Length: 351
Ligand code: SF4
Image (cartoon, rainbow, N blue to C red; front, side, top):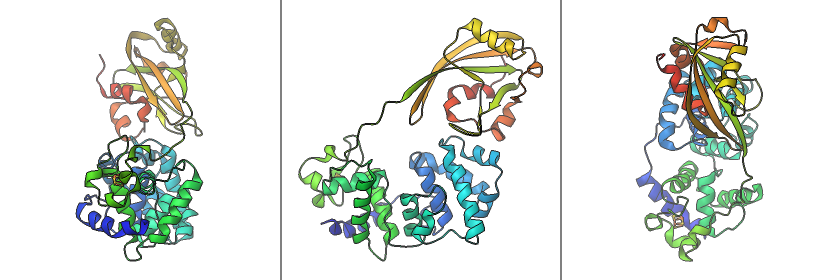
């Protein structure tokens, strides 16, 4: 039954595919960069990030040689910074072990840092026309609906069954288009949260869930563990144009990025002023900022913040503090979006 979806799906894709800066370029590097970015956010949001990245680092060699601070800055706003660190390690592997050419072979691609079955399948099929599937969340949703597969899609065994089923029906002449057609259908037609546009779907007559009116039961996914909540107080400590920043540790969450100084828990004004004095600074003015939160996959930060003007940041005893003006922050220091609600004050003039 699944084999019957190939032709209508390819015909639909041919007419409806979106024009994207990385599409139909036969460039494995473009496919790789775009697929890693697309694991993090929507197509429309990825476009400017992709252009910025490719302009600065147009090929594997440039990625391999890029200084880490510049690399993190180029990734700023996308989150999951380990992904770009892994990309750079993989680029170095490509340069040292594969003469700078991204491998065509699926298994060899899997040996590169940070490349899993989905990305390997996408690169091999889209850029090199190899007959291997590329199964992401969109494809899992489409196929579990078409086949009424009620396995838990967070399990590797279920993903493998779907990969094997797709391997058997992959059209030899257009494997890349077929994979992209499935992804595209999942992204624009077979969408989640009760919004599937089945009346526009080229494979509706073959879709078991549609025929049995069970679309909203698929895909099946085990409930996620609850997120741990962490309270923080964030400090925007400023002296004229300069704002105090700190580099995060080289391991763990948001490793190696820059942050506004912060302490665990929510503290009142007096303790906030005490904290700033302990840094060796003279606070002149304190203002409470709106609270904000940031959700990571396993943790939620609940932040309160103070903006504090001091007489001179130069007096700080904490030698780990960096004083960045707005231009340096814009060009040099990658500040994760977790601090996005407050990072914008760095760019404002002092009050
Ligand atoms: S008919 Fe509906 S549920 Fe089935 S594949 Fe198409 S959009 Fe998805």
